[in-house]
Image 1 (cartoon, rainbow, N blue to C red):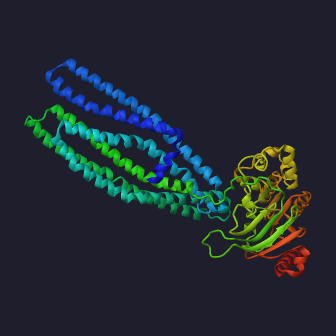
Image 2: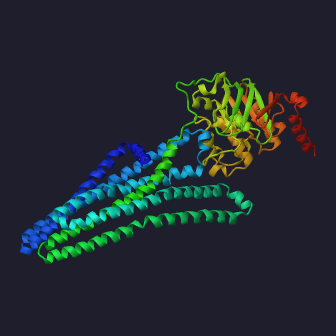
Image 3: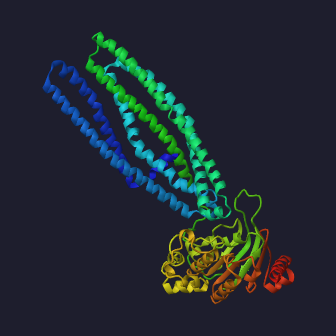
Length: 576
């Protein structure tokens, strides 16, 4: 419940709407509770005395109460909807902004499918709790308390039935809520897995079709879907038990009231109008108890969503800008001072161990190493996508932790190993590198990345639609557009994380020649082919997270066994 109350702090200006909604429900309930009193008087006085004026007078009062109740109910619906959906929008904004601030290590704690569920269905549960639960949450207790008070005023003897029924109903509700509360969280976790299965299938649909694995994916989806259906069925099986249990207790109470009340009417100790009014209160109290039970069930489910949303909002951001962080990056020099890194604090082994190397501003550096040698991990420490566990990473002569994060990352252009393009046109994707870039600058960047050729062949040029995730481009074309996007940043440090692996050697050479003309920019190239780094100023050879050796091509070929082995293997393949 604490998570839910804390999330209510995000109501902001919609708090007034929620308060007004609660006041309107109170007024609506009060008007409805007056009607049985008027009805009792109408029957016992007006009907008994055949006083038509009195009947009309009470009828008008009852009509006024009914219309007043209708009006306040309509106004409540407006204010409650505005409060619920406004609150949901603010929560989504807050959660989305928090995710944008996450470091890579924060994102490792949540799957993408889980984050989507938390941003959508979990917050929808909270909205429904306000939109559908505020009215019964206020109306139920008000109607229950006032109904019982008025029932006691009308006939204390018959009201004793409520003193027996109420504790029994409370015990039933407590048992049901304690049973289903953990089941709702389980239901949302299964929803995460369903979303993850759908996301993977849609993202990799081409691979699924290429390997003819459609039936396998259908079975996998069917399995998760059945699990969701079974979990939901089991959860709501227990949730709906409250209704028959409540009805049994309350209708038993009604039968007892009718029995004792009927005897009192026959004995002339109770008037028919009073019994009719009392029964009206009985049904209102019964409805209020049903409302309260439904609110508890709704809250039980929304609390599971509140906890999951709060987990995202409470996630401790690992990487933040220092107060008054430096915004001026002097140059593109990079230095690693005895750097070690592991992805989790409780990990047994370091991904990087005791790496020390200096890269001068304007140098072109190649990085080679086998799979899992931590090449990508090393370069991700430069723009602080991760922080070094021990040691220091310096850019422009300063520790990267001293820089303002936005300024540091703006000075580092990185073309990731996994190429990411967004739905839209080439122009819109290139604008990520520089929103103010002119068409001329964009074409120049595309020319440097050898991407101008295939775009000039089309009719639309920069306005070519790339489709969802760049689906209309080949792997090599995606890489070249991503390189152009990074070049538009005009960064002091440009990192290529195996970003030319999908292009042919001739195109790669064209790109390397174009990049060599960019003076003053530090270029770091992770590659699998020695030909990609053979002409660089410095080559780093990584092995199992350690810097095995560093030097030029000739130096490494003369002394480093790992480099010699890679060279011999690749040259032999080229010869074959």
